[in-house]
Each structure stands twice: as C-alpha cells, then as structure tokens.
Image (tube, rainbow, N blue to C red; front, side, top):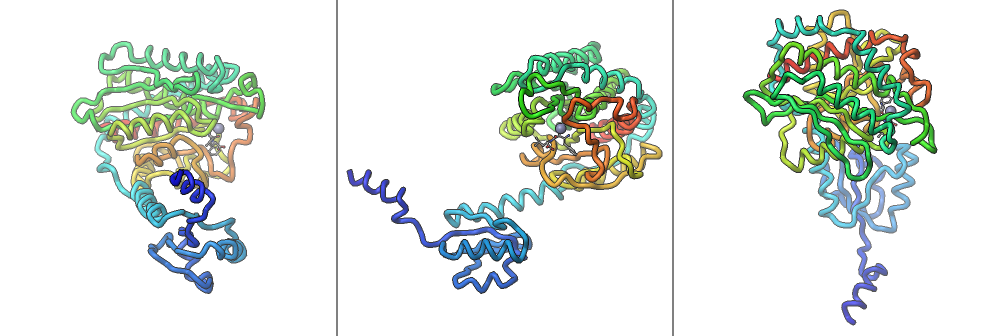
Length: 392
Ligand code: BES
Ligand code: ZN
C-alpha cells in the first residue's frame, strides 16, 4: 500500500526536482544566457555545455535561443546529470569516428589497379540499371522487391561460380519481406578485417499504395547496385584475391529509414565485427550541371578515408573532377555504419544543390540521365581502386 502510494506520488511529480539538466551549444553559453537567474555550468567543451537550470526558466531560455540563435529549442533536456553527461561521450565518439584513420591508407597497387580500371564497361552497367528498373518497383514490402533481390543474388552468384572462397547470401529482416543481399570474398591473410562496398537496392515512389506504385529507381539506386555489380564482375574475371575480407552489400529498405543497413550495422557491432572501411554507392549516374563529377558527402562520414578516396581518383581515374558537399542529415546507408562506430564514405553524383529531381517518382528512368551509364562508370573505376587498395 505504501509502495503504491509512493509510486503514485512520484508519477504525479510530487518529488520531481525543481531543476533540469540541459545540454546546449557551447557558443550559446558565452552570451547573455548567463543572465538567467540560476545558470550553473557543470561541464563544457568546444562543442557543448551541460547546464543545470531551474524548471521555471526553461521557457525563457527557449525563447532566447530562438531569438538570438534562430534555433528551435536549441537544447536538449535531461532528467538527471548522469543522463546529460552521456552527451559528451557520444559527441566524442562521433568526432573520433569522423576524424580517426581506421587503417593505413596507402597507394601501392599501381599496376593492378591501372589495369583493372580499364576493364570497366559502361554497357554492363547500363544493362543492370535497365534490368533493375524493369521491376515494377523494388519496394521493401512488395513481392517485386523480393524478386528483384533474388535477381541480384543470382547475378552475383553467376559471376562467382568458379570461386570457393566467395559466397552470396541473404541477410533476412524479420520485420519485412525484402532481404538484403551480401556477397563475401574471404580474406586470405587478414580475414577478420572487413571492407564493405554497398548500396541500397530498394526503390520508392508516391505517398500511398507504395506497394503498387511504379518506382523504377534507375538513378536511386539501380545505378549504385549496377556500379557495384561491375566492380564484382571485374574482380571475379581477374580472379582477384584480397587479404582483407570484402563484403558487397545490396541493402533492403533504405528508403523507409535506412532500416536494412541499420539492422546489419547493429548486428555487426554486436558481434564485434571489425569493419575497417565502408563505401556507399547511392546515386551514381546523373551528372550535375557544374563541372564536378564525384562529390563526397562530409557528414556521417570519415574524413581520413574520404580524403584517401580523393587521392584514389587523382591517381587512378583520369579526367574526373571531385569535390565536397553535404546532405545535412543521415541521407543514406553510410549513416547507419557511421552511427554504429564504423568509418564510411559516400561519393555522390552531384552537389546537393543540383540533384536529380526525378528520384522517388515514376520518371526515375535511365533516359532522364542521358540514356547511358557514362557517369556511373567513373564510380565503378573509383570502386575498383578502393577495392584493391583497401583489400590488401
Ligand atoms: N538516394 C537518397 C539520398 C539522397 C537524395 C542523397 C538526394 C543526396 C541527394 C536516398 O535513397 C533517400 O531517399 N534517402 C532519404 C532519407 C532516408 C533516411 C529515408 C531521403 O533523402 O529522404
Ligand atoms: Zn531515395
């Protein structure tokens, strides 16, 4: 009875503290926020400050943040100090994942890469884009989205029939029917170090009845899967054997919140798998109007690895201009890896200000990208270079 009374009182807030712990941009603390009557800075670094404030002042702080910084809210409230302190750990981890080199990035496989890169064939990539776009859609809940994954699995199997060190498997997701597809080349001497080359295979269009909506997804993202398939083809035809383990991934359910890749990255983290590099190919065949060919996203990605990929272009992909851009949110599967502590890069087809406006509609067809796969071929060359220089 007493226990019941206590729980009721607690849930009514009778014992709730008159204080709240907020984490707020460190820049905000420098300003007249300090004029808040009770404003106790408990911990701060360059990025964020943890401040104990009175509950009654929350509203005025919120208003100040809005007026001064144009931030909505602009802070996060935590019930306990312990909970709030976690923010510093999380931010530190995020900074580390962003800036830390995970391996030695060296360019040493000149002869092999130079020769393999010449084997990239635009017509192969075009063929796969057209085949994948011919499925009515590749929606994660639609039968056609299951069938398209079966097609990718068979295609990758057919390319690797002569290799006993290669397997192609489904990664099944219990919450929806579409599986992801994973092809593994077992590493010869550093098998526990994993390099992931991936892209999402699903497509989406419209807002309702998406199961039935036509969604060819030629650029988003048949182009990425076709790019990866060309890398696989070249690797297999040349009997390429990596020292690290390579995993090619065609993710399910990206378009509905990165769900396929999240489940995979979480599982890998839980199993303690050592993923030392991830590249995401999502939209490779629609060139923007400016002179850049390949644009690296700077958010949710690893700086050291991305810089290395720029070097790979300079060394191995003639005539390709590259630069940087930013999604501004976790726009594709690289974010799933990043959020789980793995280093990722995302080479993209254009800057963010200049994107293919047909994606997520029934008009995302190869015809809207010039009717050829010339642009994607540049990404396949970069992918081959990444495979060989990271696989060693
Ligand atoms: N390929 C897009 C991401 C994209 C679009 C990147 C345009 C850069 C420019 C991806 O398939 C996608 O649509 N992502 C979603 C977010 C996701 C969390 C559901 C998006 O951007 O809305
Ligand atoms: Zn999309």
